[in-house]
Image (tube, rainbow, N blue to C red; front, side):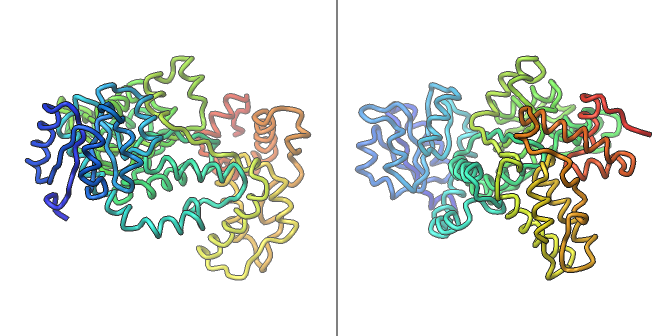
Length: 447
């Protein structure tokens, strides 16, 4: 659909700003109408437009009132009182996006183009999405416990609000899956979803990997390379383990979030990017802020909204549902039809503490499918220590302490027969995380 067919309504009481914006949009092919108040806008018919751009402070009724009255037409809110708090309030009321005055023309045009693309798709699929949301609250996420229902509800709420989301949870709880669910239900679903694990890239390379580099910027930079931030233009960038970023990289990321600009390593020119950042971590960022190892301003930029995923040990009967779901997926992948979990295997799964959470459970089930010769998976196929870990109530300590007790016990019992890669895989964590925990707990690697 060409821009000429898009009808935009500008609601702004300052005539100079309204006319200036109207001329900008008309120059780029949009059909624009103008109103100085909500009452004037309603007289034009709010539902007759593809997008409404409204100032937050208007005579009579606030511009945010248009959001509810115009549904399902997306509303872009403008305000000269730029702050994270006002942005969050607008998003909570259902605004499609938020832009501060004085706005950059390129930023305004990019935002409008994205909202129009996403808004059209959203309206065309509204009925289907309602049915899917009722039957499958979050695509790909299995679970019916209270904590997971709360996660599903939060994902539904934040998906359409084009804001940063900080996803918290232990390693292996499904933070990337939650990020993908947010992306797929957002107005950016047609754009790219780029995922990067900040802990998996060496500190010397992470800056160039994220922001790109010019030819000759450093030794080995034989050609110009686009960064992951720029590659996610028009879509979503998911940054896992964001707490591992070095201070210099944190500063560059802050500029992306504040200014919508990215500058390659070795370049003096900046380029505008339209990217939604979803960040995840298992670390305590608040403590890192206090210790001055993580920037406070970046922390608040990332934590416009937060989402916390529960550990598997706190999800009750979900562990059985997940085990059966993962078994079905592994059986299809390995072409092993007709295989099932025995009652003893299910009992072992329920009793296990799962420090690696869903990732560890998935690894255990897939390994069991490979090792099992018959139609029934038994506890020995899962290779999890049966009865080694007391339930949290019997551990006599807080959940984190009992989890570390389990880690220590598992490593000491298995390090003689398993290498570091196998230990990390069994625990559902990376080798780097295994090394960090060994160092912190005084468990040197046995050679």
